[in-house]
Image (cartoon, rainbow, N blue to C red; front, side, top):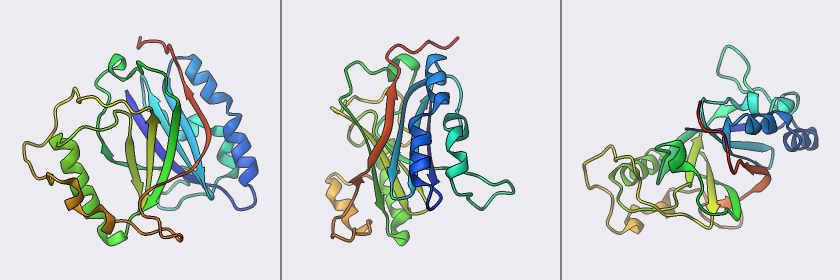
Length: 220
């Protein structure tokens, strides 16, 4: 199992075309029927588009998932070849896939949610530091399918409701105990840029689509 999270930016004036292309993607439906995807969701905030995908057998690139969107997306600089999608870095998860069967949903998911927040750039290292400790020390448990990814200082989070909380099967990578006993002592309130309305932390964003293959084919 592989979890893919990426970010794209819609061309100004072509937002509606990009959104329609995402919603009508034939490639995703075909990949689901082929048993290559367990869960996939696409979310929009302003001109940003985010894709979250659980790949069963191999890493699926966003270009393969949503080829119809390419004409309506900006190019990202930084590589010799132009890119439409930027991989986002997994900076926190409570749990991770140990196997295909471990990751199958046992109960019906009522809502799949995407959300975004901005870190203060000077606090990005501190945010990752605290969250990596929490994640790998298994300091406390949280929603199994929740994940937070980052590009620059923008955070994108994926959640499912009702939340499933389980002890991870895979062992943590740290044997330390550095996570504050009281998580509020990590002062996450100092890490985030406030929104224009004064709100801190994450805000939910629009879902373009979300699919779950209830009985995906097992790995060959």
